[in-house]
Image 1 (tube, rainbow, N blue to C red):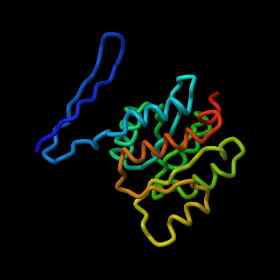
Image 2 (image 1 turned 180 degrees about the horizontal axis):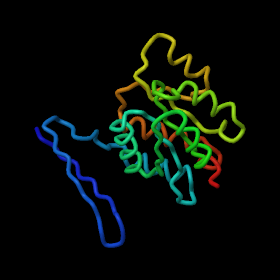
Image 3 (image 1 turned 90 degrees about the horizontal axis):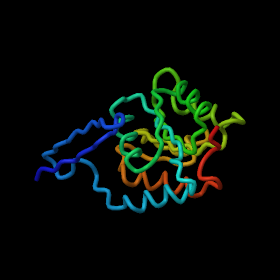
Length: 180
C-alpha cells in the first residue's frame, strides 16, 4: 500500500513551497492520531499563543531535520544545533523550554553539553530530553545523573515524542523558559 504526505511551507507573502513524500511502505510519516491533543497541549502550555521554543540537537542532519519538521508541524518554534557546543550557544541565545539532545556527537557530546547546561544559572531550568540510540545498560541512569530529565530511545516514535514535549511544557509554570 502506498501512502503520501504533503508538506507546505510559506516562503513569503504569496509564495509557497510544497513537496510530497511517497512511500511504498504502510506509513510515509507516522499517523498523527493525537495531533489535536498535541496542538491543544502546546496551546495550553502558553496561553499567549506564542509557540514555545524548543531546540533539537543532533549531528545527523537527516534525523535533526525530521524531528524539527515534525515538531514544527505540531506547533512548536523549533531551533536546531548540530553538536553540544552549538547547543549551548543556541540555549543561551534562545532560552528554550525544552531541548532534545542526542548523546553521541562529535566536538562536544550530549553528555557534556547537558552537564554544562544544568550547571549554568542561565540554562539550568531547561528541560532536557536525551534522544539517543545509546542502549547500553546504565545509559539512562547516566543521562539522569548528568541532568537529563527524560530519555527517549532511537528510533523515535515522532507522535509520542511530540506528546512528551507537550506534556513537559504543560508542567512548566510559564509554558517554557523566559523569552528574551
